Image 1 (cartoon, helix red, strand yellow):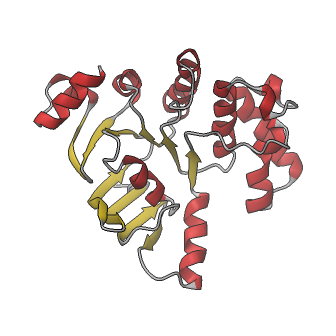
Image 2: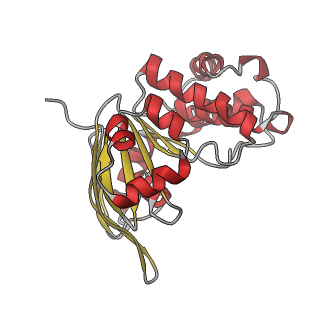
Length: 251
């Protein structure tokens, strides 16, 4: 039996006196799409950022593609392992964070060139293919300022994919977009799941996307996973009153 691509064990995180994550355990299998949802402040984004150590967990262990890092003191070996783990995680943020002085193509090429030291010719071919996959190949020579928010987010997805990660982490990728632009980003994410079997953890309030694409939904409530299940289970017969109340409010 294959091991999970992502394994999170006993994850705790506090900010000052506020405990945001209270012992999260989660295994994510290859090709699985997990949607994390819940109210603001429930710990969703913090959980995602702890997976690639953008936030340092206080307790627990994160394993991605066989690279395991425990919370603890920042030793040289541990920092090296965190860098290795991050190369296995693609991250897409609420804000697009593209380099404004670079073209679209250069933004996508930057990671493999700088971090992995791959050849420019190989990276260029891969980057152009990824831009084509997200419908942005015709904008390769443009700068981000000339793109809509939806276009910038699609470039950001291509940039994350250029590192050939084992898992893609999406932190509310449509929350900064105008309503008419949300669909184009969700459509790209759906193609990643359907066509490429990309392993994805998605923090989102887009319940239509969750219903259509997710294999599993996890409802975060006050720092714990209060309930999880398939979309059919979560939408059809949620077991907890808090889950039902939240879904009734957002659907």
